[in-house]
Every structure is written in C-alpha cells, then in structure tokens.
Image (cartoon, rainbow, N blue to C red; front, side):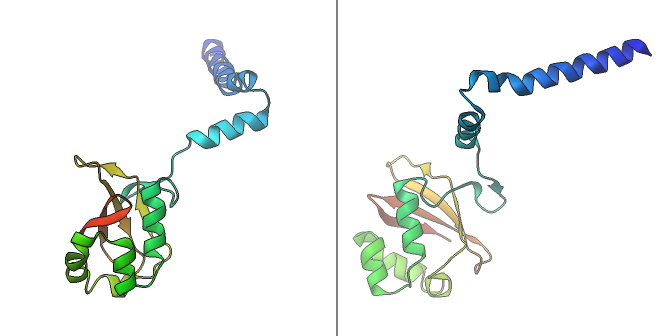
Length: 145
C-alpha cells in the first residue's frame, strides 16, 4: 500500500512542477498569461471547422464588413469582383437578401487556394447551411452555397 501511495505522491509532485516550471521562465505571471493568450485557438465549429476572429486577416476584415452591410447594387459594386457580379447576383438572389446585413456569423480560418485566393467558410444564424466565400484582391470572386 505504501508503494502505491509513494507513486501517487511522486506523480503529484511531477504534475506540480510541470505546471509551475513555465512560470519560472516568465518575467512575471502577467507576461506568462499574455503569452498563453496568444497561443490559444478559437473553438472548432461543426459547420465551418476551425473558427477565426473577424479581424484575423485582411480577407476576414473585408468579409466581416461586407456581411454586416445591406445587400443591393452598391454592395455588389463594393465587395464583389467585376467579373463575378452577375454570377453573385444570380447565385445569391435568394441568399443575400435573406441574410444581409448579418450579425453573429461565424467564420473559418482562411484557406489558401492554388490561384492565391483565400476561401473562408461562413455560418449565419439566419441560414441553415453555410457559405464559402472565395476572396482575391480583397473582393469576393466566387461563392459556394
């Protein structure tokens, strides 16, 4: 019985040192906690995968701004690439008017495509599915619903 108790005590001591050793390397507790905050990841969503903050990249900032604006001709002129405007208006005819402007949407981490565009998956609270926005040169150039 004492061997089992000694093993538990040794394990507790090892866990204790594993938890406090990083504190000794930090200048103080505040800098340690700030460093930890930078390495934390946002949750994974069942709809979009690894989530990202709305200001994570230039593409996220642009898309976040676009999705918070009302849909219309000015929206298409401002946020959609010229060669995709007709396709976006046809593809999104039932989608955009029902979800824009939107709040509380969840965006994924941007994925880089072969043509250097970025794909961001978005889940909207007012839409049952998800949408994939392809962004290049800070404009939406493709959309998947």
